[in-house]
Length: 264
Image (cartoon, rainbow, N blue to C red; front, side):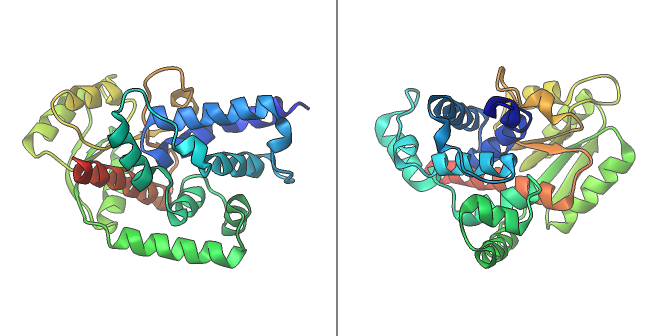
């Protein structure tokens, strides 16, 4: 089987990881595209591991760590600003990489160590460090957009266990916009398909017309929103979800939101 055929099923979820790591669809998809182009040009760069998915993620993070790639200019950002932002943010701390690999992508600590090229014990240390960082993060308010009552209750309990406060639960597009306007939350968790046939994407797009706020989408079909072919969410929680995944993505979304505020 060709290398392309082996890695193809894993590319959509690699996009999810890349978007969470970088904080945006555009940046994450750009890195994935750069990786695929590099593998087409020279497949000998692909790691020799028994598990092709592990090898793919390792190859991606090897590229991510490349100084040449991280310092490549973005034509839409002034040179001085871009240089400063990349120096501070572009190369994520390894603890966040380890946390995303385990909590979002479902790799074991041992697999995470293989991907990062470190000893297994070091991976455990990184995960403990990530847990401390998250525990020390400032709590925020959360709007939940979800039409399934039981799922909404689960998400609410999960969010509150993480130390955040839920401002409301909306079941439709109209309710979501109204609740957001009533008490503007610090982050939004939104299902894609809502009770009245409306779209969580549409509701969020309307909200974002008036104010910038981090958004995490919840869907049972992540592959449909990980094609890289159109504007798509940076943060996706897959149903059925685990608390660790929700925690990881909330942490990432708030990290980039805080970073952007400090930069501003």
